[in-house]
Length: 342
Length: 263
Image (cartoon, rainbow over all chains, first blue to last red):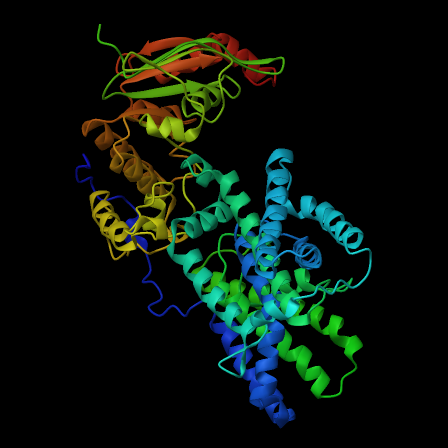
C-alpha cells in the first residue's frame, strides 16, 4: 500500500520531553466535584442523601440533561444552539396537540421527536445557507420557535388525553428509578461512545478543532455541523415528549431555562467553548451537579428565587476552574497560554 | 513528449472584476519537484487552490495523465490523487497523530453500520509511518499533534499524503517558521517523497530553500506563468528574483533607493 522508504531522522525530533504517564479522564474534575457536593449536602442536610431524594434529583436532571448531551456535540463543533429550549417546548406542544387530535400517543411521541429533529435541520440549513455562526441563527430561531409554540398552544396549558399511556416514559422502572432518568443515563453512555469511538464523533471533534484542516482533508464540514444540530433538535424533541408523559401537560414557560442549563452543564462537564473536544458523560455529571444544588437549595430553605443566580454563578465558577487548569497545564508544558478561548 | 502528470491549460479565475489568473498554463511531470514562485498576489495560491479543488475555475482545463478532470471539491482532488498540505491548516492540533493521519479517511470496524473507528489499525499504521519519517523516538501515535515541533508536523502531513499514495503533493510554505535543521529535515523528506515516486509542487518565499530541493522552477507574475522551465542548476537566485519582480537589477536597486517596494 505504501511506497514510503525510510527517511533520515528529522532534526529536532530528539528534543521531546517525556510525556505525562498518567492521563486522568476529562470527566474526573466534574465527578470529584459531584461527589464532594453530595457529601457536603448530605452533611448539611442528611435528608438529601435519602434514595428518594437522590432519585428525584436524577429525574429532574433527565430532561435538561438530554439537551445537554446534544449540546456537547454542537459545542464540540465550535457552535452553540440557543434555540434548544424552545425546540423542547414546541415538540412537547406538537405532541400534545396531536394527541388532542386523536393521534395514537406513541405515534404522536415519534412525531414529536421528528419535529425536534426537523427544527434542528432548519437551524442547520440556515447556518449553512447564510454562512453564519449557529449562535446568531439560533438567536433568531429561538424566538420564532418560542412564538410558534405560543401560537400553537394558544398561550395556554395543553393537556392531552391519553398522556397516561406515555406515562410509561415517566413511570418508575424497577419500581423506584424514574424511567426518564434511565433513558438519560443510557443515552449519555451511548452518545459518549458515539463521540469518542465513531467516525462521526471523530469528525465532530476535527471540525471543531480546526475547521480548515478538516475541510482540506476532505471532511464535509457543513454536513457534520448540520448533523450535530439535527441531533441536538432530536434530543430536545425527545425531552419534550418525555415531558408530556411525565407532566401530562405542557404549560407556557416550561423548559425556558433548559438551553442555558444544557450549555452550563456541558461547560461544567469539561466541554470547551472553543470546540474540538467535549465529554458527554461530563455534561451528564454537570447536569447532576446543577440539579443537586438547585434541589439542595430547597432542602436548605434557600428562597427559590436565588436559583437563577446560583446557576449563573456555577457557570462562571466552572469557566474559571477550567481556565485555571488549562493555564496551569500550559505553563507546565512550556506553552504560552495566550489564546483566551483555548 | 510524454504526457505530464498534471497539465493545467488556459486557466482563468476571476473574483468579481479581479483577474487572479489570466490564461495560466502549468504542468507537473511524473516524479518531479516543481518550485512555484511569485510575488504576493502573483496568483500562486489561486492556482494551487484551483488544483486542490478549493475554488472553482472560471475557465480552462485540467488534465491528469492526459485525461480531462473536473475538480469540484477538495474531496474530488484527493480522490484524483492530489493532496495539498497547507502550512497552518494541514493538521488538527488537538487530535492524535494517528487520527490526523487518517483525517477524512478513517477506517471503520465491522459491522460497518455502527460506524466505529478501527483505532488499533490506525495506531499500527501510524507507528510504522512515524518510524519511516524518522520521528519514532518515544512518540506514541496517540500523542496530540499540538505537542510536535513544526518540522515534525510537516513530516506527519507529508507522510499522510505518501501513505495514501497521492500522485501529487502540494506543499504550501512548508519551511515557514522552521529552524535551519528542521528545514533541512523537511527538504530531505520532500526529496524522499519524490524518490519513492510522488510528484511535488513546492511553494516557498525563501528562494534558497526552493533552489535546494526542486527539479524545475516556475515563476508567476500578475496571474500568468512567465517562466516555466528554469533549471535551478543552471541559474542563480538573483536571476530568478529578477524574473519574479519583472525588473532588471538596476530597477530593483532604484526602487529600493526610492523607498518603493520592488513590484
